[in-house]
Length: 306
Ligand code: ATP
Image 1 (spheres, rainbow, N blue to C red):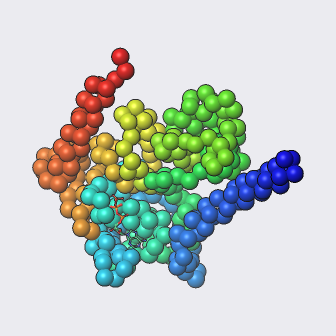
Image 2 (cartoon, rainbow, N blue to C red; image 1 turned 90 degrees about the vertical axis):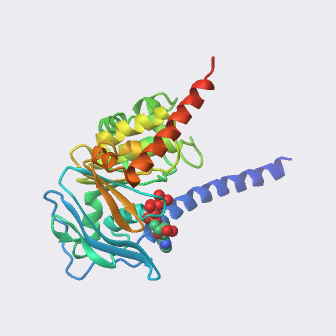
């Protein structure tokens, strides 16, 4: 039996090693794949960040010329402020975050940071100025500590822990038998969507970018997780110029300005209170979501363990 077992065991080992390698390679391709066509313009200069103030000026965009996604979208995010973008599914919200990170170039108008057109600056400088908390964070098959430290390679253990605490994921990690040395991913601990997002927030807190893009996960979260994530997001966006792509309206209540995107246009804009008073699309979305949350809370109460 051992004669069969050893080779099988060996194959298992090789398979696992290959799998690890493949996941890292997949991750690398996933990252590289994002910008197949974008290249630095000859003579591109590093982005000089002063504010930073972000401006979208009459921005139009399509993936496919037959199907415009954004049509003449204009807005400004003043330095240190938060603008939230909401709207029906497919309205082009995440597209705005991809354009800001320059995964694609605009097809009309321009996007500037402190007056510099994104197409005139080096991508490296642009991407080091922006922290992105994506919808789905892919974690490396490594320790949870490494996954956070990735935001600022070489950061001290203390800095990693402080970032985790600020992102509301510290106590969770500290309660694991191996703490920050716990392996995550394929061969290790599987984290929930909410936990992964908080790890991504911790990573971004460590990176300390001057601009932040939060692309909120669509997935429904329970009330406690949602509150924890909200606290983590408040922490990471404090005093940073922030664009929040919001799928849940609870995230946007405190935004300085909310843009309601519909059919590629900014259909409504204003603060939460102003938009409720307008009694338009935002007010409708808000009421619908509130009813859904209330129904969920009633359900949770009536199904609580005695
Ligand atoms: P959701 O709330 O569902 O996440 P969204 O408002 O963020 O939606 P986007 O992801 O910006 O929407 O997508 C806007 C439209 O662009 C969608 O109709 C989508 O199908 C299309 N789209 C997105 N990415 C691509 C792509 N790479 N190629 C072609 N079309 C795309």
